[in-house]
Image (tube, rainbow, N blue to C red):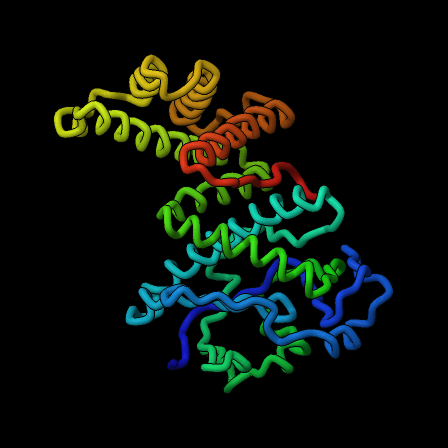
Length: 328
């Protein structure tokens, strides 16, 4: 296997993984010496390779991502694709965190990355065959993992250095087994773009950009409804006749889906609510958010987001949740 070109970036918060199983799982690294922790961790805590996508998560929460489909492209073309892939992977980690916490009934705290990866946060790099060293393109020479722990200059992500997470191996393995199952399911169903929109929607809410969040959530609702519509036409042998008819708005489609028993009255009402808010934003010259106070906008945005994720999960028959709100 040749060296893999890709991108690397840091999670928002550090995490430390102990070799031995321990019950000392803390969200705050209070009594631990960082240097001593590094003596007890693996270089790689998780690896994924499906012959196209490669993911390597290292011991200080550096993540390396590569995709064979983009390796032949030049850097300017491939970087935006890889950045989008990075955010899709973070979205699945985000959802898996919610699922894992629910499984454990909140008995452990798990890391969540809640900032969008952009070109400012990535490092262009290649990883060696053994993935025990990374060459950062644009830096001086090859940087080994041992050096990463000491070098702040390549930590391009502004992490919350006051908070670290400490996990035992059992916890990490359980989490990433669940993550890998979810990742494979989303890749198989070819719904990565919808996951990306859901992730962006929740991140916009965390930045108080409620109007943008509503638009992104409605994109998901519209996408799912369009797929429901196409399936309903196929089942009734009407697809060829009606698929290109531009007169069928989302309002008409949702009402017809309701009349044919595809969606419930409650779902129809929620679609209408989201559609009207989306239209208000589109026709309000971008002052829609100014008409409401913070709590009202948060309530509207959260209602539409939570419905979009429920409709998405129901249609694609997957367990997909995201914690909604603001971190303290």
